Image 1 (cartoon, rainbow, N blue to C red):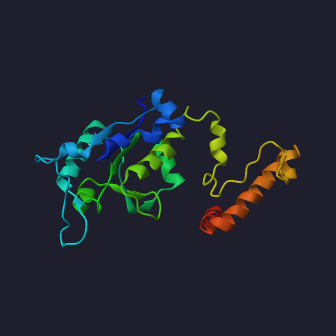
Image 2: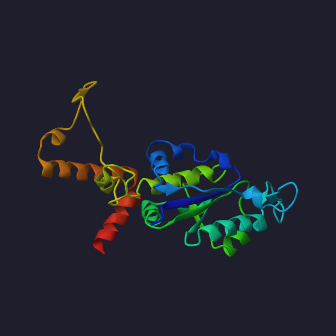
Image 3: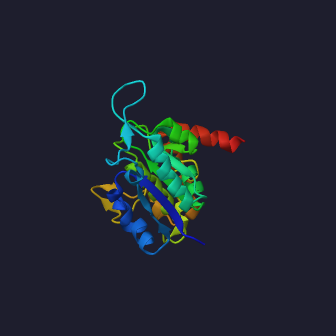
Length: 235
């Protein structure tokens, strides 16, 4: 079976692997558990200046990535990796969720188009059926950092990347809640103690404490998640 693959289309290939070449993802990349082909979008420009952008139709500030150049780059990625979902990192896309990350990690990989300037000509998005995904409600200078976030989130779920894979089951979002607090030695630090429940040796009590803490933190910080979980549990 071929390793999971993230094909990245970017104007700045030198940004990769960047942080993805370090720690868990970096070791997994070296071990061949996943692959990272990177294509320079500018290589698909037709003119001598290797132009990838032009002024926006209808006027306005900034520049727009050209549909013809982008489509040629995307077509090359599809030809080499036909079964992969095609994703355009965009602030107007659907928010990236752990559920979507799990589904992408379970597949063959992804093709990621990293936009720049004011964005990508809509015709390329429509014609090549790109799924728009956002890394959050903020705007970055380009899609590269968002692509790294998506890749890192997927790679850590691949078999063999994380040693204690059972730890993934209790992370934030995996059960619809945010994760409970963690503690380790020393038992008392700056007058603050580890909660008694965690030192009790009573596994049922520990599980109950962790569940209560997850629910409390989720209610305070992400009530939308708690409301969604209640609705899901009721159906």
